Image (cartoon, rainbow, N blue to C red; front, side):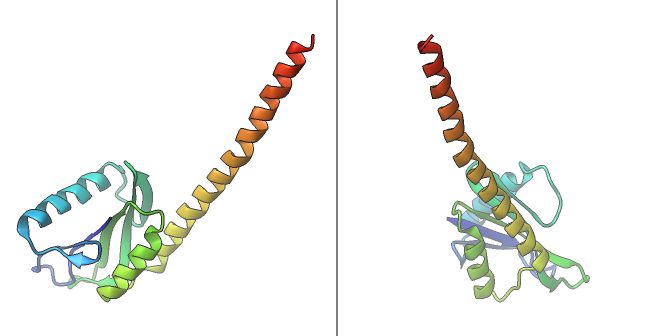
Length: 144
């Protein structure tokens, strides 16, 4: 499940909300999805762009498109996914809606992914070492 929310380049147009790559037109589904995404992103406590994190089991991206709105500001977006392959999902949806995600956003995503891979590698190494230490300690205490 993934959601993408952004304001189009023309400021008088309605915000766009996509669910699994499909534009939501139904007003009640639009409203509930919009509220869900915004509340989840607000929990991040960061207003920085780009920002990537994991909140309540969802990968959250506050990112930028390589597009300016009619006032010349860089277009931002909110993306939420429950998939660990959220980067690929974002790329597919951006391509589908003909928006280009900024390099700065992709760099932040890659940094987040690399950090989490290193963290998991450390845990995979530290836990067996710790267990081996405990076993050796127990054996040495029992042999005395």
